[in-house]
Image (cartoon, rainbow, N blue to C red):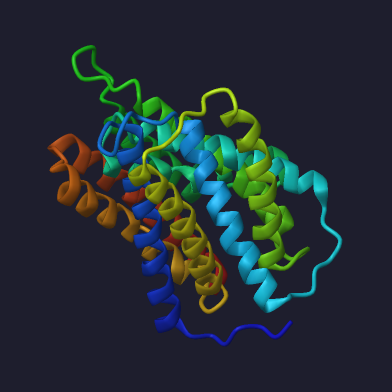
Length: 293
């Protein structure tokens, strides 16, 4: 397989595009989880639509590109898909109750959870700068949770748990990377995710309205596009260059939430998001320093 050429400007464009697509999936999930497009759908049904239509899109790409597939590591795929399905389902549940920007900001704790989990699972060492970044990001999460009796948002715990689940998924992705081609990983992930989601949705399925069907198709296609942009962007630039650009998701999420639902982030949301982003930037800065040392 010929490696992609190093092209930071193209990588930046691809990651910004992926950020816009990912924020778009949360916008559609919020519309589906409320009564905007009809009777609210269960988060497991929204998750099922995400995997169904993403799988069909990726299957079509495989049919056109006909990549060479290798023998998959089924154990790692099962672990990655199980945590990924749980994470995305919880995230879709959370955006029905809290601002999209808050849920998106909490999702940026994924790398922090992955870092902590990498200590026992990958036997990685964590220095003081990484712990500082984790502490700052978790402080931001506490701010977004609004831990007072008058303002506490229980639904924010769904987004926080989702970040933990996706952090665990990142551990499995790291173990899979280098073993298999990206398109094979995406195909198997979405096929297995569709299997899990199909079983789960059988208990809560309700017939969507035509508008809801369109939104479900949109979630799947946007997620497939986001995954393709992200994988190709990562292949064309250093991770330390790409990672901060992915925070554009928070900007798109806030813009979409304001444009469609008229939600304006309050001071607590802005402060909590800023603190989480600060923790993320500390982590990215430290990783870049380590690579160039």
